[in-house]
Length: 378
Image (cartoon, rainbow, N blue to C red; front, top):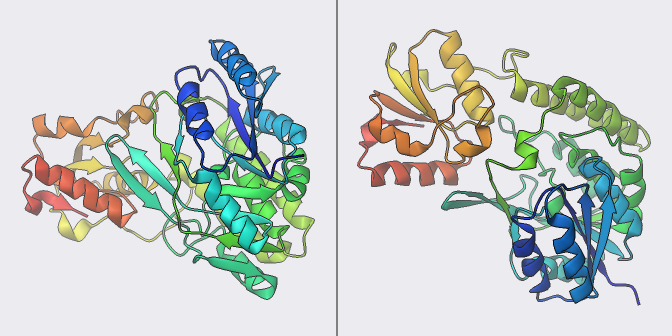
């Protein structure tokens, strides 16, 4: 008898993390699943570890593929899967014991084509829950169509309505398989979005949950964070890939403005000078002109703040820090650990973080270092 769930885990040189993720999956409170591990041509000890686990537990299937990227590896696994539904994990993250049970409960109660959840983002000792901007609920028929204009472009700066990550999704195999098989294997950034958003348009019923049972862990040495490729060529391939899939639905005209916004967002992330996408958002009114500032946050908002502050010749950025500073090593911006704040002379610390809960966590951290609240700007 085939299992209800197939869990797909691609891995490339993941020997440092694979034991933990496999252990977390084997401890799931829901046990009727198969775990398909695809080794994408690793050069470390990943293969031997995977082969051992596949011998020890009949639920684990091990596949090996010559190195071809995560799209190819996932496609290989999904084509080999037997479950009615498919979900995904990354080898260097973590999951709660009831990660799969959350999906199963939604499936048993509502029989959707797709289940969408939130997730927790972990930065060192901080963890912040991220929920989708589209409200929690069960969507089908016209109610589902009504949220299509909001699934990619949210209401905030650099904000998506539904997170694009596959590891917060559980999708019917019959829905996801043809979309994955049609995905360009050259895509190396935004590859999850190339699956998730077309799957939404091909679903007749979805469930959105605000529960967060998946833990995304920032790691400086992550393959995802360090790979090198032609970024702009990738953006165009991604745009064409998603666009072609949307044209196969009745909703292309509805989705095209969002797709174009998403492309601009991806290019803007790499080069803030490329588009004047947003009105001025740096808190100039709270910072004296000519001040020396520490910029806290190296993500999308941090890039935006840096660009605007420097283009106005407003002052000096004497230090740029991020709680997950290691992920930015080698990107040319010289992002440092927040611990270096203590040895730096400055007038203000400007927090460049979207999520208000993360802002609160940063403020709490700074106060714990006896930094005056009068010097903290957000």
